[in-house]
Image (cartoon, rainbow, N blue to C red; front, side, top):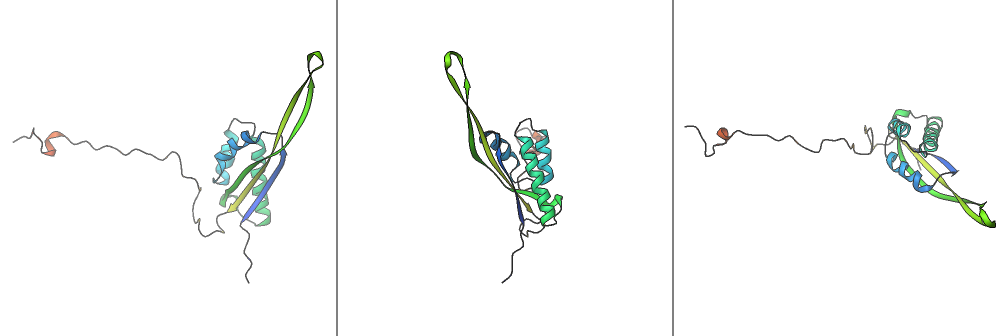
Length: 155
C-alpha cells in the first residue's frame, strides 16, 4: 500500500483577543487566494484583525517550506476558518456601588496552505478565486444606416 504524500499544512492561532465576526470579515477575503496575493491584501486592509492573520499565514508558509520543502510561489490558502474561543469576563466598578460587566471575546483561527505543484488537479492556476476585475461588458458594434440596407439607402 502506497503512502500518500502530504500536500496541506496548517497553522493554528488560539485565544486571539479578537471577535470572531471581525476576524471572519478578513478571512473571507483571503480564502482561496495565492500566498503572495494574500500577503499583499493583508498589508493593505485597514482592519485590526489583519496583523494576527498575517502572522498565521506567514507561519503556515514557513511550516510548508520546512516540512514539505515547497516554494512560496506555489502555495494557495486552501482552508481558512475562524471559531469562537472563550470570553474573558471582568467587572468594572461604576457609580453607587454598581458593577458593569466587560466581555473580551477571543477566537481560534486555522489557516491551511496547499502546495499546488504537488497537486495534479490545479495545474498552473495562479489563484483559485476568479478575478473580480474581469471585464463584464463587451464592446458595442455600431453600423451606419447606409450599410445595413435600410430605408435610407443611396441608389
